[in-house]
Image (cartoon, rainbow, N blue to C red; front, side, top):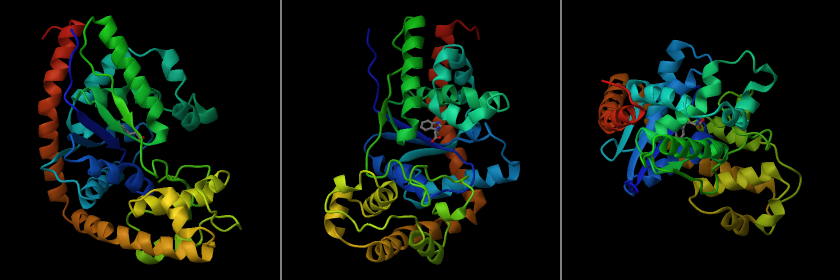
Length: 336
Ligand code: TRP
C-alpha cells in the first residue's frame, strides 16, 4: 500500500544572533510567498541553536526576533503555523528514534558538520553532530512534503530522505514521505559582502560583511557602498559574472529584492560601473527593508504578543505532530 501525503511545507530558521539579509531573501521572503499555496509550517529552531553555546537571555531575544522577522515580512498566523521548536516536545522525541535509524557513516559525510567542527571535532557538542537527525525529525514529524531551504541545506534534506526510506524499510511501512527540497529564486545563497566565497552569516567577525534586518538606512547604504567588488563594469550577459563572485552576489541581491531574475538586472545595468550600480542597490534595499525593520521593531516592543502567537502556533503544530509520533511509537513497538 502506498501512502498519499497532503502537500505540506515545513522550514526553520535558527535563532542565533540577529537576522540578516541572507535569512530574509534566502528564507523568510520565499516562505511567505508559499503561504496560501499549500499548508505552511514555519519554525524558530531553538533546539538547533543550542548545538553551540547560546547565552540564555540572548537566545530568548533572538527567538522573538526571528518570529518578528517572519511576521513583519508578511507571515499571517491565520494562514501559516509559526512556533518555536522547543514548545513541541515531539521534535526531540522523534529525533531520538532517528538517531537510532541514521548510521554514523551517513553523519560523517555531512559537509556542514565538517566545516563547522573543522580541526576542533573532538571538542564540539554531540548535538552538533546529531543536528541533521533533529532536522529530519522537524520535517517528518509533520509529514512535510516540501522544504524550502538554501543550497547549503540540500544535503540535510537528502539525509532526511534517507532516514525516511530506512525507517519505512525497517518497519515495513510507507509511513514517512520522501520530502522534496525546494531551492529556487535568485538569492538562495546570499554571500558575505567582503568575501564572495563565504555565506553571509550572522556570526562572521565583521559587521560590514552582512546587512542586518535591523540596520538603519545609513548603515545599509554604507555597507553596500563599501562592499567588495572588482574593477570591471557590469557585463552584457550573466555568463560574464562567472568568475566574479562578489559582483554576482550584488546582482543576485538586486534581483531578489526587486522580484526579478539576475539576467533581467544584467540587461538593465549592462556596462554600468559600480558607481552607478551600488547606490541603486542601496536605495532599493532601503526601500524594501525599512518597512520590514520598522515593523520588526514595533513587534519586538510587544513581547507578550509575540509569545502569544508562538504559543498558539505551538498548539496547532502539536495537534499535527501528536498522531504522527503515536503511530511512530506503535511501529517501533513502544508500549504506552
Ligand atoms: N538547518 C537549517 C539551517 O541551518 C535550519 C533548520 C532546522 C531547518 N530544521 C529545519 C530548515 C527543517 C528546514 C527544515 O538553515
